[in-house]
Image (cartoon, rainbow, N blue to C red; front, side):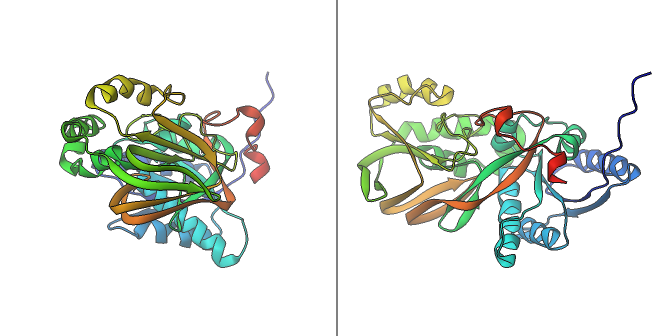
Length: 326
């Protein structure tokens, strides 16, 4: 007979849940029941309004949770990460609970990059039993993010996709809204600087600052980003005609645009964006409006649970073993 597998150590984990359907809640209830039967301590928290997820995550970290699971879309993950970072800053150290992800949103770009299953029960199992990978924390104007921040054409399309359209059509909602914006295709104007160097000063259609690679339902604007290299990937798509944009669009989606003559692509530790007029920027699915945007790396990492090497990691050599985190 094969040797018996050792039992997993009991965990203290907390879930922050932003679920839109009774079926999803029921699936999570079943998954939580199985974890409790296995001896784990599980505390679920349902969000009702903006800010709940951040507060629940901070309080979970303060209670000593070893794992905090964000069940929702990219915006929910963003709030949870900021809550965990709040707790670390309040303590004055770099210790943070591990982060699990259950993709319940429209685009689910960060979870897609992690290759987390879409089924809630399967995703919960990955959160508990998967492998932990170190992921950098980035910040926009002091707010942490894990994935990608975009400005210009892409950010406007994401912001203007209605909740009703997203519920009905999922990621296709962004395509439809993007087509409407494409008719105008009005450039914005801004100055991009990093470490005293001017990277671009003029018109642009899209810019992205990425810690990861996917945004807007799988578009790979920051296609060379590495989740743990301590750098931000900046992509600026300069102003061009409609026909030029039609030709480059498939490259932007697949991530093969880096060498295009009208694309600026740099890897930097920080970048400042100063716009001539107020600009709407999307960060992990949430809109931010301002004229000046300061992007930087946060001097700490978070361990994120995934079934295998995430998109934008260096593979097995870069991960931290789950058991070693316990």
